[in-house]
Every structure is written in C-alpha cells, then in structure tokens.
Length: 208
Ligand SMILES: CC(=O)SCCNC(=O)CCNC(=O)[C@H](O)C(C)(C)COP(=O)(O)OP(=O)(O)OC[C@H]1O[C@@H](n2cnc3c(N)ncnc32)[C@H](O)[C@@H]1OP(=O)(O)O
Image (cartoon, rainbow, N blue to C red):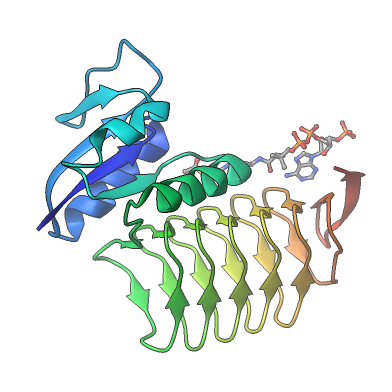
C-alpha cells in the first residue's frame, strides 16, 4: 500500500481525504496546507505548506491536489507529475461508474455520482457529490461538475469550465473553455469560451 499526500486541507481537502479513505488503498494519508495553524484535519496530520511538496516525495509517492480553483489545481497537478509523483484518480466507493468510461489523473469522483457508458473525463476534474454524467459525454481537463449537476448524453465541456451547483445541461450541448454555468441554470443551447451563463433557459450574463 502506498502513502498519499493531499495538497489543500480546506473543506474540499476533507472530502478528498474521505474519498481516499473509502478506497482502502492508502497506508498513510497526510495534508499540506498554507494555514500554519492547521495541525490536524479529520485526524490526519498537516505536515507542511503546499509549495513544500518536493520534500515529502520519499515517504508519499502519491499526491493529490485538493484545491477548488480549476486553473491552480491543474497547474499543481502538472508540477507534481514533473517532480515524479504518481497522481491518482480517486473514486468514492459509493458511486456508479461505467466500465467503459475513462477518468483522468488527479480527478476525483465524489459520493453519489453516476458516470455512464463511454464517458471521457480529463485530468484534474472534480465530479462532485450526487452529480450525473450521462453516456458519451466528454469533459476536458480541470473541469468542476458541482454537486447535483446533471449532464445529458453526449455533452461536451471544455477545459477549466465550472458547472455550478444544481445546473442541468441538455443532451448534445457543447460548452466551451473557461465557462461558468451559474447555479441552477438549465442549458439548452451551445456556448463558446469565456462566458458566465445562467438562468432558465441559460443565457450569457457576462464575458469573463
Ligand atoms: C461542495 C461545494 O460546495 S462545491 C461548490 C459549489 N458552489 C457553486 O456551485 C457556486 C455557485 N455560485 C454561483 O453560481 C455564482 O453565482 C457564480 C460563481 C456563477 C458567480 O460568478 P461571478 O463571476 O462571481 O458572478 P457575479 O457574482 O459577479 O454575478 C454576475 C451576475 O450574474 C448574476 N448571477 C449570479 N449567479 C446567478 C445564478 N445562479 N443565476 C442567475 N444569475 C446569476 C448576478 O446576480 C449578477 O447579476 P448582475 O450583474 O445583474 O448583478
């Protein structure tokens, strides 16, 4: 069994640790975080700051980035890989994941999520609590699918986009890079890069 270092000990880090715990795969789990007052989270030690990950490679061969910001998360994952860490895919034991789906490195699938046939999910994504990703969806790197989001079949989501809590995206819809889909939106049209969209049906609120 390997040891796992989690970068980020905030709320998201806690859930990441519990997902890792549910996999029964790690001998030792510890956190790095920039809050010097944090010593323990969920009973796991906070052993240093995030940019000190280099120091812990000998003991923790595996490392996972638990940072909500899509861009930062992806940048750190790439740095960890360059340094020689193994960046795992974390999948909670209470999920339904099709055997024909592909899920990238540094991506986490939270409790209650459902991923159906022939889905492709990139690196550094968050597939959050009780969300569903239906057949043939393609989700690029660094995307966050928030709690309670539902994607119909064959949806495309570009790099770094964030689908906020409770949004629904109809089947065959294409959403570009760095798009924010506001909470509760219902997306029934395609949208290109760098926009905030929201409402029912979703419309462009502003350019990002
Ligand atoms: C486990 C977890 O907690 S995971 C994290 C879950 N969290 C989420 O999913 C985040 C939910 N938050 C949202 O949806 C937010 O509204 C965000 C992040 C999309 C707002 O993004 P920002 O770029 O900061 O937009 P900002 O707050 O400046 O709002 C811009 C406009 O959009 C409007 N707007 C914001 N959210 C929504 C919404 N959900 N639906 C419709 N309009 C909205 C605002 O009222 C504002 O309108 P105005 O210009 O007329 O005043």
